[in-house]
Image (cartoon, rainbow, N blue to C red; front, side, top):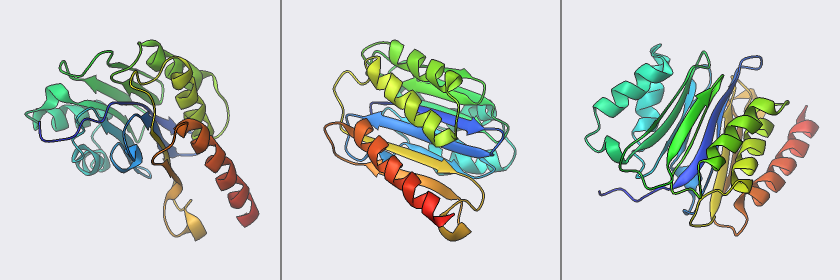
Length: 217
């Protein structure tokens, strides 16, 4: 394997009312936000991790933009990757359909689950409870998508998280014309690249982001 391992846990989500797509991710890995999360407004979102194939991000979004479903996109990406057994991927398409994949050579504990409008997955975890906690929290939380994703990520850490510890986290949410000044689609793009409590720090800067966004309205 030439790629560096990206052992992490993430949740990919969609809000059918606001038409937002996003990813929240945490890892014992430097600057995980530069590798795992990919999203495009009115197209979908992808998390690529565990010896991450970063081509899955842009290539997957192109497939989703062509109208491929989450599962079809995942199948095409994996079929073209000779090292797919090392990969872990979560995809949510423009309709909220979700798919997740964990290769049989991912390090334990590794696995994922999907539900309405989300895919949750992780590898090198303390246990499967991390993924279960993310799924249950996402399903049971009300509010805007970014908040739900952060709550789910925090619950995953509370259930055990990455067995190696913690280092970085990121939150990415897209929505048409929701970016600064309405000139792009990036509603939230926050990263904690190196921190002893990355999710706690991510929640702090998300709070600042919300305060600033409220002042611009």
